[in-house]
Image 1 (cartoon, rainbow, N blue to C red):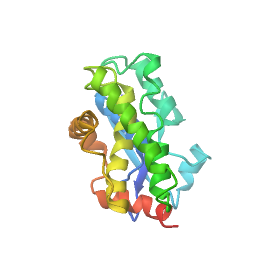
Image 2: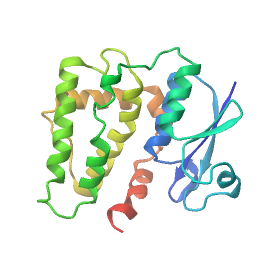
Image 3: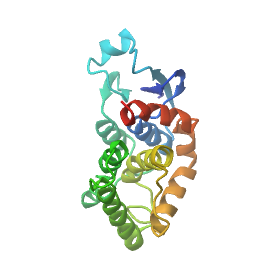
Image 4: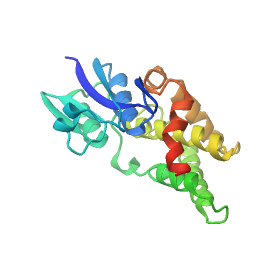
Length: 213
């Protein structure tokens, strides 16, 4: 059975896969579970009527599942895990919080114009906590096996790396060796390479209006 999924198109390139980390999370789950799917690219600045008719909130990703259209990457990955339990991407519930605040802290720091507002330190605190967890439990969040937590974190860490490098010339400290190894391992996976936006410029273009409104 082939799935159908609506995901973000690249800013300025409506026929190219975009940079939405939540869309990529859903695509990564489909890829890791070796499920076939058809992709519909949605231009979020000019959403087609048929898409809004299916999904009035207008958000991506949106997955056709058992003839129903399901929004929200959280819901999508749970449904896929329940229906296709192999290979398993499950993890103990207490690991759900690992890295959970990195994306919001990164986004706040990225948009910040004040070097002394504490946003950089808030992000560093989250990255140091991830380093500590991976050092004791790695290489992945749930040990040796990749899980849904990693598939949620991978696109967000990619945004962090590319956007902060471009807009702030800021990079994850070299001392965080486990975080660096973790990111390299995730970004090198075939599933990640197939589901990321093909050029970093598209990700940068997606952030540009938020960083420089």
